[in-house]
Image 1 (tube, rainbow, N blue to C red):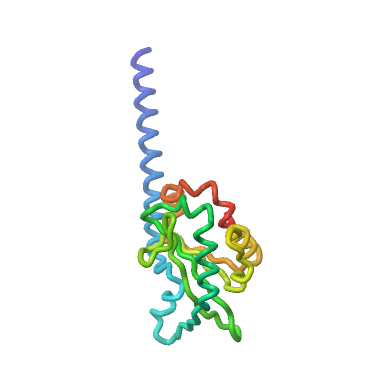
Image 2: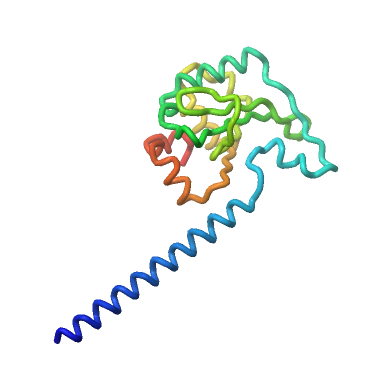
Length: 176
């Protein structure tokens, strides 16, 4: 009887180890696949193609101030991981062509001048006029519903959950 129980325990342990190894391989493969997808900066992703000219049009100083004030007054900025900033890029369309505009690198409680974002949000600049200092989440949700919001990350969903766990309470803010 004891031999049979011992044998069952060994089989159970071996089965669990096999399942854990299989899950680790799947997560590793998915993570490697996501890292191979390339640069997360939307303006520079086309820059590698020498036959394609990236067009850029800066935001006005008023627009920059409006966006910066709204970002800095947003509640979620406190929960952004220190080593994993979020970028917010703007774009517009002229004659059917996407024109890249300024972007902001958002860190824990501040706007950053350098760093590598773990998440990039890409938002149509027509929403800047609707920003009022404390409605960034509402605007992002509206843009998402209208198809005017893009999302890019070099990380898999599992890694994003681990790195940005403190921001889960704001997932509705980003349209997820």
